[in-house]
Each structure stands twice: as C-alpha cells, then as structure tokens.
Image (cartoon, rainbow, N blue to C red; front, side):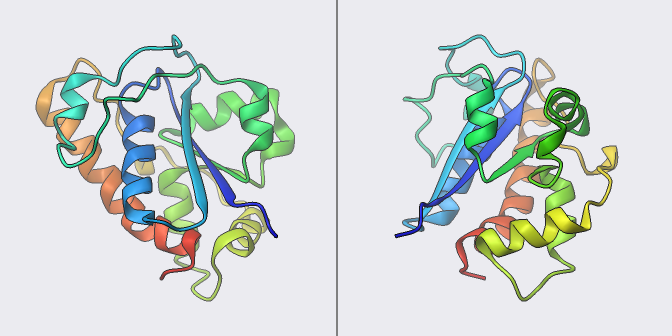
Length: 174
C-alpha cells in the first residue's frame, strides 16, 4: 500500500499562516489520504496559534495546535512543501537545493496546477516540479502577525481561496 501524500506548510513563526494552512487543508480534505503538517523557519516550539488568527477560522479547532521549528527531517520527509512567502522558499533552498522540485510557495503551486488539469496527487507534484516556474512575491500570503484583525482575515481569505483550488487536486477530488 502506498504511503499517504505528505504536505508540509511553512511560514516564519508557525503561529499564523502555516497553522491556518494546515487546519484549513485538513478541513477541506476531509478523510482523504493526505497528511498535512506545518512548521516555522524561526518558530519557538510549543506556542499556541495566534488568537487573532484563530478568530478568523472559528469553525476549526486550533486548541491542540502547538508551533514547531523547522527541522531537516520535516523537509526531507515531505512529498510537498508549500510556503507562505517566496522568502521562506528561498531560505529552505539555500540549505536544501535538492528540494527545488517539491518546494513552492502556496500561490506559486496554485498558479502552476492550473496548467496541468489532468493530474492529481503525487503525479501532480512531479509535473509541477518539472516545470520549475519562479516564485513571484505577488503570490505570497502576507504576514498578518501584529497587524490586526483585518490583516489576519485577509491572510485567511487568501489561504482559503488558494487551498480550495490546491487541496482537491492533491486529494484527487477535483
């Protein structure tokens, strides 16, 4: 039996964007055989999700979430790594250039899959990796930390919009 597809979401502190990505993706995927997780490039392990960000996803339970600092085994064990910003992607690529075919910004991946309508799951990840399009900052999810409720709501809206396209393609439910 094939291992489930493993997707790692990545941001800076793992308290706003990447946990929102993880929770929203899990919700959208339902019982699909995909494992979603998250971490932060500069996270302090064990922190709760930012309460302002949590308030933007009231239908999801973030009570058990705790931040995790990015570790090599997380990156190397993931089939796909999706970052909030192009700076996170570059940070990882500087140390792990071999991940260039499985590491994208969320916006970059969403844009790329539109050009490959017939594939899903691992085949989709492989096809996107072969195209290797650049990550454009205008496709980034802006950091809402300490920027108030509107910024948090905007980040969640952007994440949700992108994941509504991405998750069905990863699960094969498109």
